[in-house]
Length: 50
Length: 241
Image 1 (tube, rainbow over the protein chains, first blue to last red):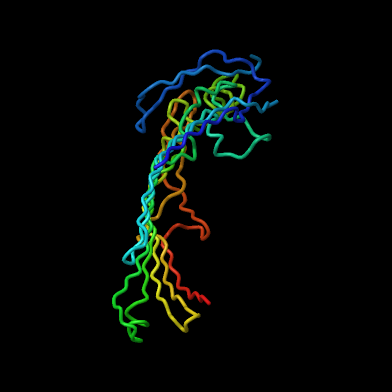
Image 2: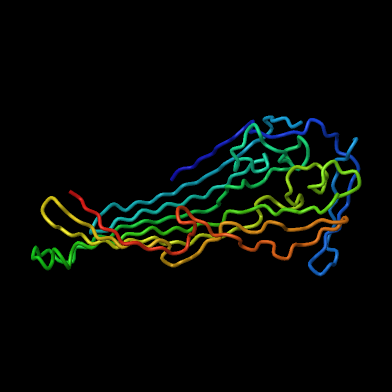
């Protein structure tokens, strides 16, 4: 029997250097297959010229 | 302009249990079980070898903690058993015993594994909202198109149940030359394992997320080297001298 623990750090990620900070919220209605609303999703947004 | 930086982390835990029964009375058995969990916050970048020419993968710009989740290559359980059975039915050295009764060997590999998983995605039609920087994601960032309120790797592809087996017959031509007539079957039970499913969970248009009807439908069952993992069989003759 053995156990392995592996920790990775400083993995490559990517960042957009031109886009502005997060701005106003946008809200989405979440529907089921019948078109009934079953939830809402709200997220900060990235906008042109921000 | 995209900057490649080093903001990602990963964690892997694995428990391995192995049991071996050495050959005795013509039977050898080995069993191995692995429990593991692979987690990362580099938006499953562990499944990609792209380093310096990569596109934006995160949900939000430079904020990676919200992308922590099960890695794309994660497989939680995997168990395999292999065996070799070479029975001696008679101790007689008569030709009939040598060429017919003894000299058979049955071996096999049994594989049981939990499913690897895919991450549900959302397809955005048109601009998600007025003035969006990019039109491909709900927040206008243009990174990953995963459904941001569902976990990573929450769409199981398929579990694996598989038996590969071989029946071999030893043919003692001379003292120094032997032949082995082998009949092999891969995936004996023909348990086809899907290897990809449709990941689109929602389509977004006009501020409404609508479920995609065929979300999760299987789309392929590939396998190396024949392009399928369906049952296959072959007969071969091996000479040892």
